[in-house]
Length: 393
Picture 1 (cartoon, rainbow, N blue to C red):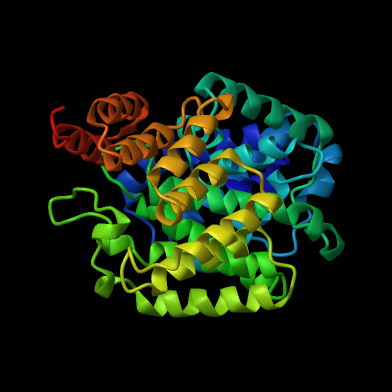
Picture 2 (spheres, helix red, strand yellow):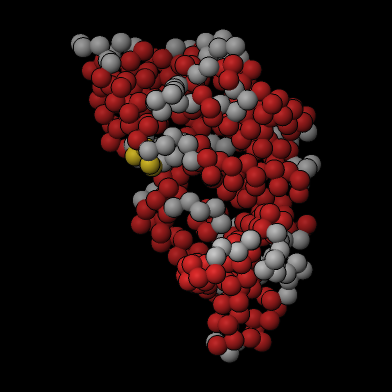
């Protein structure tokens, strides 16, 4: 709805207001007349009509006319299933406009197109909520001031926007895969939305190795969804999951995409992460995983994407190849990186390494530090359990 209305309004703030007004109109009309057969199309038509009315009242119809030319108008009786995916992808590419700073492109798209809260976006970028809110406001103002057109870029423009679009889809998936807040470990709506966008991108750009790599990464990671918690909703670590229940169809498709991406010789960070996920998916057990190969892949990944989060994940592989003491030294070095100051997985990983080194007092302190930074109820319960089951010194 927002994407379709934005194409008419030419203004994201106005589009948001019109969508909200459409919901208000629905409360009255649907209560009186009943819910229409295609409620999404009904709401979209009302929102777009409100946007046109506002434009006319502002007496700027002539200046807005170029934004009203649309190749595929959405009528009230148009099927939602056909219109919405195209419009959503259109707005993803629009928000990932190169005139905006990269972080602003990604954050704005997550907020407006993907429905991720400002708080959760801030957690993904490891910044405060107020900082992220200010970035979003500046980005929206810049889009309005620059009069960025609401259209899918030409083929020649796609490469410069692709990395930002892939980042959006990846962060949308990770936000759903392990929700930053709330009582559930997984937000299935966000995960499914990310998978849908990744599949659409694959159809749009089938020969881009990173597009295939991202879809592979998402499929291989999501293949474990059913086994990440037990019957009581308690978190199960990778080594404790029932691998026989993993989605073998998704794993097979993901592995095929990984091979295709790596064969191009142009594999980037997503294809390399997918290769790591594929090794995990095909290992008979956690201990039997090819950890030396995973460590080599992390080394290659760090050269392409020198992220402190990647370095922290690499430390887990180091612990399996060289032992927890070597990994702890790397984690303690990373702890001095200010970008990881609020990242709860750093003290959680540190706590696990200290537990394996039989240093329960220090491990307890690390678990408490992780708990102080964790808002997801399922993860908090897991950390509390690990803390209470530590041996007394």
